Length: 324
Length: 314
Image (tube, rainbow over all chains, first blue to last red; front, side):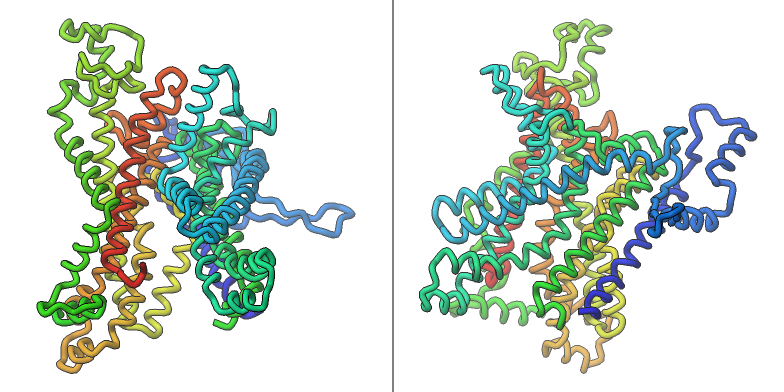
């Protein structure tokens, strides 16, 4: 187990370093100076700006400074635990704000959105998938598979606006507002649409995956044994079949976290939610290099850590993986 | 080489007819049996033809702002009306109405179709090229070379790709070719893994040993014997990559990081339409449904090809 964990860690660490290095040097390789505007700046001002943001040092030193600054340990008086702060440097566009400020402001929102989406995707996806497997080749199966094909094919930046359009049409036809279509934090109802839109592709994948592995498991010998033994159908499904059928779902959680992080960027834009994704898109459009770089590294670390956790979880659940 | 293709084909058909049937004619027969896939081919062909002849179907240039033009040109007086986006209007040949910037939405949607497909095909070919070469070399040489090459793939695989692509687009401007390259570079990884797996099983086959025994170089064995024999699964995977690439392109364009004005793409049109869905829903509905239809068609065709070329997977 320890060896397995170490081998996973051995992939996670170089990946994280690759993300940081790649983003840093891509930003430095970008043509032009981040402070260039229509009018070239007077050399003295520019030199001062460069000095303020540390751009006058050699690139390698800038890199070590940036990496060294990313995670800072500081120990407060009287506390025995060091506090960890993440420092992504100043924002190039908002002169009085740091990138960390935006990430701190946006992350709780994005995290809540993402966790709700994953939870809903798991519950509905596993439920619908098992139902489809147990009622294979009935209308129920076809409905679930049809919906999941749609969820996989149609991207959430199409589903989101179309659902908004439907809610608006119902509003203008019957004067009933089903759910709010934008915003965040004023009422829990505002979360319904974005969470659903974000979860939809994952519901679809998980339902498909569960159906596939469930059908396979239901054909296996030990299920036949359980049936022959007279285990009640319900117990058989929950205790024997579902347990084995869920293993591939656990390993899908890693890619799911990545997909939800990426999807949250779009969903936050559609539903005007003040999460990290919104800051990221604004940063990208305003060429706020440090902001984009900071969010890429932050999200990258998040996805890599999620993958690591999922791998370890999978190793704990399935002894066959550890042996390999 | 041809003989091996034939043996695999006869092994997969249950009744061997007196005349040998090739893998491809068998696959074609199976594909034609899949109604959904065949219908998708026709729908997709219809959309592509429509997009290709779009300039003949509409009198309005794709980048002309109708309202602006009407102010200066008496010929366009019908559009002298600041109230746009215009609803679909058959009298003036505005089949889809006008978009958020008061440009002909039909023409612009069709340009979006062409751009999506162009990006989809080009980037898939880039992925195909890199993936096949990388995977076959890694699989054929095996051992330490294989381990290092696949470990590199593992690491790149774990990178948060969409974000790296966005970073690239921000840094180097919204360059069209860069977009092809960036998306292609994302999609080759799975291809490399598939190709490597196939190569591993191919390289121990007799015809490869025979080639090696008769002194053919590694390069020529890979080129003449390995690559032609793994085309089946590779083609299946490519057809599934095309819709993914189209998704990435429209995702970027939706965020405003992809194709720039006055050019357009389905992602751009959807993002513009989403802002006006309250008063001009057609600006959203047309591009959104076209994108959805294209993606459905490509997925059905991909599934059909997979069933046709890889019968054991059914």
